[in-house]
Length: 109
Length: 112
Image (tube, rainbow over the protein chains, first blue to last red):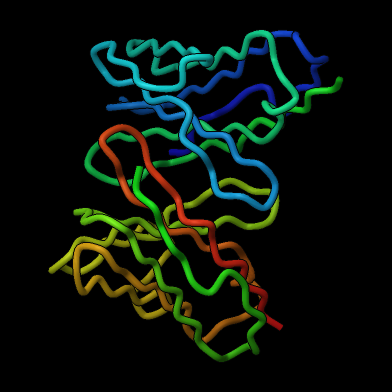
């Protein structure tokens, strides 16, 4: 099942914070976060593994509640370069990712 | 991280024809993945390709329509067969790294 992302879109001023949420109806092995700019490939941001391990970029943080099958991505002190569409991807086993519908983030100067 | 070369980057094709998309990785990988992304939409997994075995297709995708080859650990092809305008989309290959997945730059396909 496709994970559910919220909100669908966010408009921020540079320097403001944002939280993007991702929830799944099935048990998860891992949650991934990607950012995609228009016309480009998705770029890996963060992976959160069952058991608490996290790997990703230094300036981005995320949480993973295994019991609730939910994850949140925290963007602090946003920069213009943070603009794009953010996707969470979930993985239930040894297969590819199932992506949410995405959250469009617009950062204004 | 792995570097993926995907060809062609875009193509305009006549309905009823087939297009083969190539994906070359600069390192050996066990699994390669093919995704479809319709304009402004999310990514949908088409299939998983392991070297030396048949590809595994997701619900809604069949081998006759999207045959996949995986001749070695660095290369894969996806063919979109008997195309219709509904196949117009971006097709991306992807590989799993130690942490996260890396994507090719995609093939933008328009069927007319």
